Length: 407
Ligand code: PMT
Image (cartoon, rainbow, N blue to C red; front, side, top):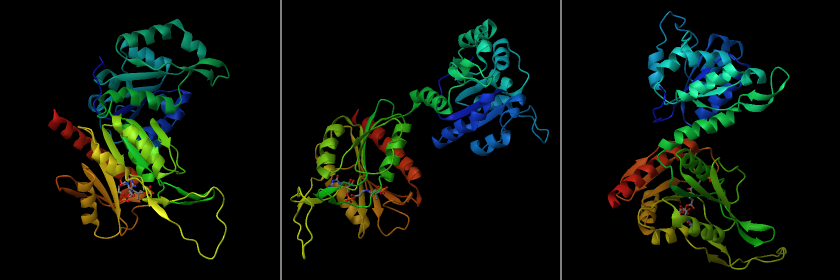
């Protein structure tokens, strides 16, 4: 009976023969984008609605449709059932639901279902009268009794031209349901994380500012990666043109002073803080209320902005893990190590301006993580998403070893 809690992120998708099958490649893409492993099994009739080839490409795994593969080898359904942390059958047709409820194992999807030890979910999809039929209803009830989680069909226009309950939920909804089901085992569930990202703008007058080239990509990728590990993420962001990641609470600020004020509040309750923003060290002493007129020579007086990371290091609560960034153009290791010590950090992520494809605005980054104990982890050039997940994994490791040491 499928009741065991899931452990990691291996998703087995079973597809049966309904029109909603055409939406499944989109769900596979969403799951893959979230870093989950996906394998697909189809009933023979599902192939009339979506191709196994498409699903194999998007899942990056062979798709099982028969008991035997093209070379005559047996597709081991027991192994598949044991491999998965979660099985979702979507769309689940009336026939597949009936066979699941009554123990008929006449295709690879069904034999795998009966072998699965992980939680199983079904998303029934059919025409409205079928969905309301007492037999279908009884089968669904029986499956629920067996521990299967049923994702109810939605209301809306149906392939028959009728309108009513029977539609399979959209891939985004199914994705959210899967993530929720996996969440209980995510390492940062219940943890608060604060991340900063982007530049700050220091106004000179109503139309001009002092800023920098930070796009926010690095910090946003970190916030996204923390959210995918189950954390409650507050992202304090300077002005950027990218959307907030899903399940992240974004606070938009403009100046270093505004970022400072927002950080001091959010960091109080944060278990982990990562400061990836490129904060202006100086601001104009005076912000003119009118546009500055053109003149032969203009002298600007700049005053120092608060060093947010420095302040957070000074008041760091016990058990908090504090990670800074350092953007350096010379003596990189030395300057970054000094910042790590001076600002009371657990680790610092060094970005060198000398590295091609790294730093501001690129989709890639090359960083070196330096730890409080002097250890150094030099990472190769990778996508900012991959760098983010390395930083998040390290943050998790540091946080739990700190927590363990303090307990
Ligand atoms: O946004 P992208 O285009 O993706 O680019 C990413 C990035 C290059 C901005 C990022 O990877 C990065 O290196 N961020 C830190 C940039 C920076 O300001 O470094 P710094 O060495 O000047 O500052 C050291 C640390 O102190 C940083 O964590 C910074 O957030 C923090 N700081 C700096 C000044 C200040 N007044 N307050 C701060 O909190």
